[in-house]
Length: 361
Image (tube, rainbow, N blue to C red; front, side, top):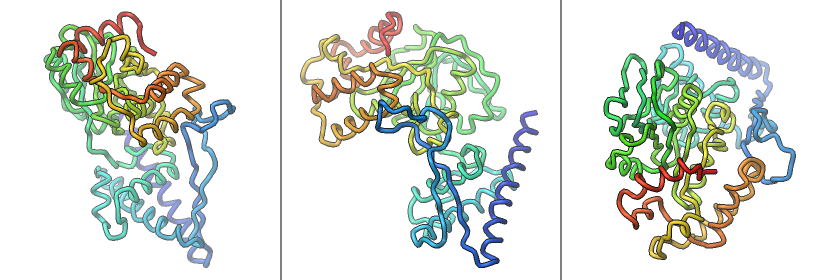
């Protein structure tokens, strides 16, 4: 059944690609400059009081590409070259990475970001997600805890050894037969914190699933988290550093990223709650001054820009208050600063007391 559905999706996409390229060829054959209209999406604006539609899946305007504009010629060239590669992947039912695509025409593409943009444009034009193009990411995410699942015939049995890390599957659409006895999902920003919890045997004492994207989460990590929340209906908490970049990673999990705004519905996890670490935790947990670092000019600029995001005021005003407090105090600190009390304070005191006491926002 799933195989038939996948085959049907490939056929539909190939038909769309043929129709798109045929229209361009027809325009060129009669001496007319092709016009490509690309919908534009956003997940936030900078007016918290506006009646915006950022949280919807509707496009926010269009971008017009034409050969009559010199700066569009190269972009259209890249788009068509990448589209040809995608067509080949779909026809042969093979997968390739963004990096694979880049190295097929490095002199034309010049840098990876050019390919990334073309792939996003193609997804918008074809009204699909990146994985539908058979373009995959190199997975960075890790998972451990009380979960078992299959992916492409391969068994991931985390339950047997709940404190052992397993790579998050790249082809999340092939994940099935998910079994779990977990009480909640914990997402941690960094691999170092993930390893700390594993060393402390955190999942032995806590029936949970722990995930890390090892920094900014890649698409497979976000899709995998989205899948687990949908299938298991578990409360989900996120633990990040108390700095502007940690806060931005938190918002990426919950609201999505601007770069992938067109696919936000498939990637964002509005169920995610912020567990910590909060700027206000520094007083509550009596952290000494040696744990703090001053916010850099870049940190302040990033935090001030994030304060203007409409969803903070509209959906999570308490997050905004904590971000304001960070700016007022002018300092940041890492999750690991809690180790000033003891090496296992994070796993045995902080996380469990916050979840049990409902201290999350």
